Each structure stands twice: as C-alpha cells, then as structure tokens.
Amino acid sequence: MVPFVPPSEQKACFGCATAKRACDKQKPSCQRCDERAIRCQYPTTRRYLRSKSATNASSQHSNRVGLQGSTGQTGHLRTPASDCVADLPTLGSPITSSFTYKPWFVGLETWAIENRGVTTCRFSSGPSYGSPQLGDWTKSLWNWLRQWVDEGNNPFIHKQLYLDTGLPPCLEDAWTTLTAYFSKTALNTPLVMQIIEHRVDALLQSQPHDDASFMAVPSLQTIQHLARVQALFIYQFLQFYDGCIRQRAMADRSIPTLLQWCEHLWQSVMLDAVHNEQSLTTMDMNSSDAMAETPTSKHWKAWILSESLRRTWVVCTSTIAAYLRERDGWNECAGEIRYTACQGLWDASSSAMWLQLSSRRDPLFVRSLHVDELLLSVAPTEVDTFSTALMRLLIGRDEMESWGRR
Image 1 (cartoon, rainbow, N blue to C red):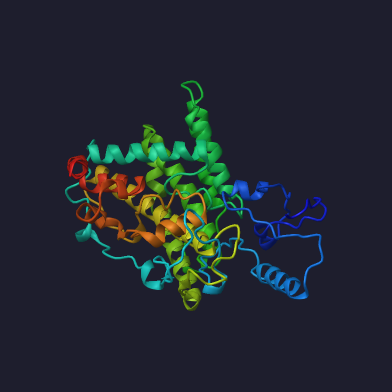
Image 2: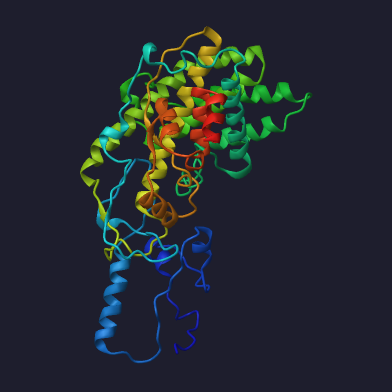
C-alpha cells in the first residue's frame, strides 16, 4: 500500500507537467484536466527507499514526458510529426492491435479548390426567392449564430479554436454586437443597426493598407485571416437578412471584400501547407510516444483549425451564392473544397474521443458541392448537422426526407 503523500511532496500530473502549467494536485483529477475532459494521471510517489534501477527507470520516464513540451496552438496550420503525437484514445478498452493512423485532412492536395465558374454551380435549379431551400439554410445560420452567443461555439466556430490564443478582438466585437442584436427591441433597433455599421467600418479600417494585393496574405497569420472572415460574415449576414433595405445595400457593397478575404485566407492556408508538408507523417497507435498523456493531441488541434477554415469558407461562399441567386437569378460558383462530414467528430469533447472516432470509422471527407453523394453511402445518423444543413440547401427537403425514410 502506498502511504499518504503530503501535497507539498506530490508532483504535478503528467498533463500539467507536459504543458508546463500549474497543477492544483487535487485527486482523483486536477481542475485543469477536468476542464479539458481528459484523464488525470499522477506520477507514483513513494516515501520508501527504492532500488537504483527503479529510480533510474522513473527518472527516465519523467524526462521522456517532460521533453514532449507544450502543444500550444499557433496562428499557423501545423501538423505534427509522429514523435509528437499524444493523448490517444483512453475510452473503453485499451488498443491492443497494431496499426498506423494517418490524418485524412493533411497534404497540399486536400486544400485544392475545384469546379469554379458558372457552369459548375449546383444552385442552377436550386434556391430562388422565397424558396424553402434558402429559407432552411438561413434558419440554420440564425440558429448557429444564436448558439455561438449562448454557448461560445457552433458548427463552423469550434469551441477549442481560440482556446489558447483567446478570442480575437474583431470576434469579441462581433460577439457583443450579436448579443445586442438578439436582445434588440422596436425602440432600440436603430441604435443596434448603427452599431453594426460602425463595427463593419472599424473592421475594414483595421486591416492592412495593401489588403487588395497578395502581399496582404503573409502580413497576417492564418488564424487572423480566419477571425476577420468570420467577423465580417456575421455582420454581413445580419445586414442581409434583417429586413432593412439600407442595411442590405451596405451588405451588397461588402460582398467583394468578403470574397477577397476568403481568397486570402485560402492562400495563407496553402502557404502553411507547403511549408509543413514534410512533417505530415503517420503514427503508430501502440508506440510509447503515442500513448503519452498530454492535455490535447496536436493532430486534434491541427484538425480543429483545418476544419474551422474549411467550414467557414463553405458557409461564406454558400451564403453569398444563395443570396446572389435569390437577388439576381444566377451566381458564379466560387468552387468546392473538402471538409469532414462524419457525425461526432466536431463535437468530440477530447482529443482521445476524437481520435477514437476518426480511427474507427470513415471521417467522410467530402466535396462541399457534392455532399449529396452521401445519400448513396451512409445513413442520416452518420452525418453531422453542418452537412445536413448544406445538403438541404443543395438538394432540398424532398430528397432529404426521402433519404431519412430509407
């Protein structure tokens, strides 16, 4: 039996020690591990004399864990080498079979934009003024923006996305503006809409002076590009669908800017992907490094940034396309990209759960304008809410209801 160890002699848990964060040393789990929904494990501390070999083994193990370093998220898209992977599945039975896991979302080819142009537009027989398809998509977006205000996340803004960096100032402004908008009354509506106008102006004026050129791309980190796209989209959506003619006209004028920012966002991602292509490797699920305990898996964090980029791009381009289709009767297709449609991955509460799901089922890495191909391959319960909303926009309610009855 291991005797009681006073808190002053108790070492920090592996997770806090690896991340170089303070540990409150509470048992069975410290507060930091509880907040991240990960397993909290402490090094064994004995007050009795141990053999030299045991002491050396313990020291080597502690050094190996400590040298793994912090997994803090940077502003650029990074995918780790196999010797840095950590926090693998701990749910249920331990993994005993030997296999390798290769992330599906890495590689320069996964960032290709395909099928640009009018002739490839999937809205050719789709949303028109007052159509149920556009109405359903708009309703989904309203619900997602409300969810972001209430819960701090939604199907295109991940709850972990800005956990390490903090919410960027432009998104702080967008969040407070949304909060005011959802609380507006008939008496204060003019004030709230004036605030939206001022927020848009401030956001545009805060950007680099050469924002129209390619040189604006490396002047911002990828996550900064992402934040400003998300913020401008939120304002633009409010102005599109508030019902005010003045606000809608102002949103029309900002469409080119949002599309240009989306283009810069994608160029920034491509630069990161080229820079990091050599570090994209497979990992052995049974290696000692892979099974080490860390607060979050670097692969999970890389996927969160990657998938947030992809979904934000899809939301922006699909909404603008549907809006232009409704306004003008036609629209030029911005193209399509690949994103992850598998149910459960976006909502995974930990890297262990995410990796367990993604390594045991098809992540459904689909083309955004051909998401309806899922009708032939999976059941509705295997697809997440983001994909369901996008499918409803592209193919309509009737096809979706028929799919649900199969």
